Image (tube, rainbow, N blue to C red; front, side, top):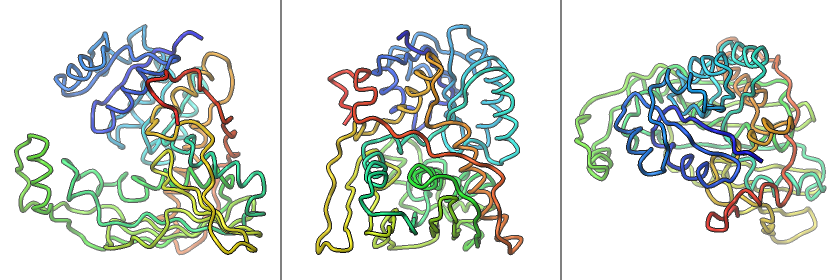
Length: 385
C-alpha cells in the first residue's frame, strides 16, 4: 500500500512520539511540519528527516500533504481542522476533537461535504491493554457488564507543565484534558452513552505556579520566570458524573485537578454479572488486565496477545491510512470523538441545569483489533507489543 503522506501542525510536547512512530510505520510518511515557532519545526524536521518546514497555511495548502495531524492547543483544534478539511485534506486531531460540540458538528459536516476523513486521539484504546479487555468482555470473561467506575484524580499540571495556563481556561480542565482517554475507553468497551448527569465545581479560583516548577524549567534548559504568578481558573477543575450506557451499564466517573493522594482509586473498573475486570490506565497502550470471577479466590492477569503494547501514539493515524486507501472504517473516528465531546461537555450542562442530559449523538463501538492487526506495518526495530 502506498504510504499516506502526513503533515504535522504544532511541534509541542506530544509531537516527538508521533514523529517517531509515523516515520517508522510503513504505511505513513511525514512529509511536512509547521509551527508558529519556526525553529521548533526546523529542529523536528532535522531530527526525523522531514523534507518540508512550512507555515501553517503553507502546510494546509501543500499538494504533497494528504492528512493533517493537528497537534495545536485545544482551542485551535476546531479552526485548524476545519481549514484542513476545506482544503481537501484528511485530518486527525489531538484530543479533544474541539472545545464545544457546535464546532465538532461543523467540522464533521464539512468533512462529509469534502469527502475526507476526520480522526481524533486518543488511540490508546487500540493498544494491547484495552484490546485485551475488549476481547475478554466480548468472550464473556466477566459475564454481562452491569456497572463501572472511572477515576482520574490529581493535583493539576502546574507543578510540571511549562505553560499550564490553558488547562484552566474554557476548553481545558481535567475532563476535556484527560476525560477523552477514559470515556473513549469506556465507549470502546461498552458502546455509546444514552444519558448522564454531573456536578462540577471550581475548587480554587486561582492556581499559584509552585516553586517546584523551577526544577522542570532548569531541567529543560529554560529560564524560570513564573515564580509567584497565579493562574486565574475559568473552567471547572473537579467534575463527577454518572453515565448510563445504551447497552445497560451505569458508570461513575470523577476527574479532578484538586485532590491529593488518590492512589487507591483504580483508573477503570468494570463490574460484570459473573465477575470484575480491572482495566489498565487508558492513557497508556499496555498495562495489566486483571479479572476475578465470582467463584475465584484470586485475581488473574490476562496475557496481552495484541500488538501495540508500547507507546504507539499514531496507530490511529495508521488506521486512517488504511481507511483512506481501502475505503474501510477507521476506529479513532470523528464520530466517536464527537460522541465523547458531547458527553464531556454535558457534565457541566447537567451541573448548571440540575437535570439529566440525554445525549443527541449516537455511536457504535469501534471494531475490535485483530491480534496481529497492522503487524506488517511495524519494522522489527520498532516493537508493536
